[in-house]
Length: 99
Image (cartoon, rainbow, N blue to C red; front, top):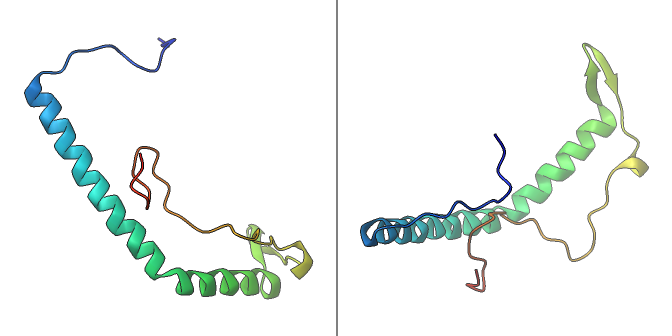
């Protein structure tokens, strides 16, 4: 059975609404901690990217069984200027506190 709408209309009791708001607040607090942790390891993550690129250009990666393919340096992806790694959460708060 498929739904034509994404939302199902329902009524929440005040108790359910209070519980839901508490859960949302807890999840947003956890998200902010995770986001800060991701910011803290940013230099380490850059090293991981370089180590991975070095590995696939020198050793290669397995394609089928023991068959390995090396990637040429000019085929490696280039990170666009201004693009930052970030924690993605569809219904969270961002650093500015917006929803």
